[in-house]
Length: 366
Image 1 (cartoon, rainbow, N blue to C red):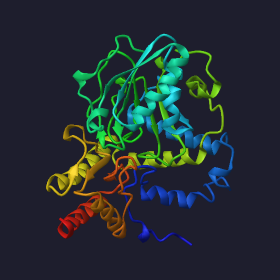
Image 2: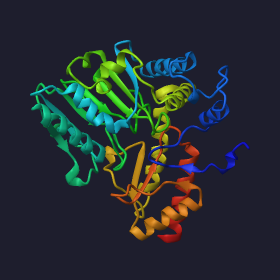
Image 3: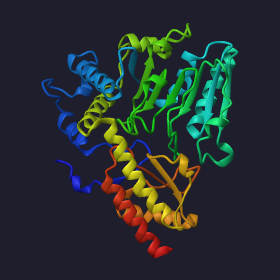
Image 4: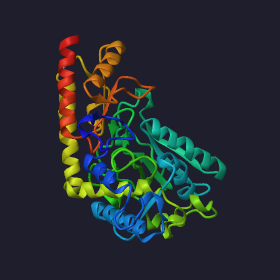
């Protein structure tokens, strides 16, 4: 029996996040029997011509959206961004070298932890060049406060901090290789690839389901470290389909990339994100009842975080919002408050529904 799409509600989940409805409908129609295959794409060899065509198309779409040349390798890997916290220093941090990290939130802190495991084993160093931990990660540390290491192996940044609702507003310009965990704002805006050596992103925010990470690694970033386990060496995946990839997840990523293309590409995604964020932050700033938790010059256009006058009111807000079809608004478990994740696939109508609920809730409880 076909699903009743009228039952779909407004999904503000931080991850896995909302997927475009038209992509879900494509998946519904193709999942039992992929066209011309006689079986589901999830049931056949990852070396079949049908899956290879999907994978190749996804790579081509990413290259086109980002303007990436052949000197960029596009990898679809398992383990999510969390594996990349360890895999990145394994590949890019040689013995005796130093890697700089910006500590701007929970996931950046975890990246530092994993890098230090690698550094300690190799006699290398991890330098936290700047941190906003002392202000509960409510901002991105200003550029003039970064204590960067001359000649560092790389600088690692987290472009968007899902838990705390902060975001790098512009691409850092540094004299060393730049590495970015772009998980929660990847493909929400254009990327200046010339500034980076490596970008990785868990797919489950803006470009697909959980189960696959996209890793973009420039040719110049390869061959820095030798003797790695085969599966953890970027060169393995840059040169071949070494093992079975997360087939169904990659197929969905391909469909979402097609959706982004059809809806105007990254410039259109950026305009869409800015409009949704402006509407929601405008509602927060219009009243003393709601208080944004991120400093205005660091605010994320993907994850909008705010507080109410009391935790009791926050709990009531989440419960009543869910009753109105506004899902997953509870803040991260260690932070509390309210968080609305408004990734690419979240429709402007969903943001408008949330703003209208906020106004009604304040009128009843303010």
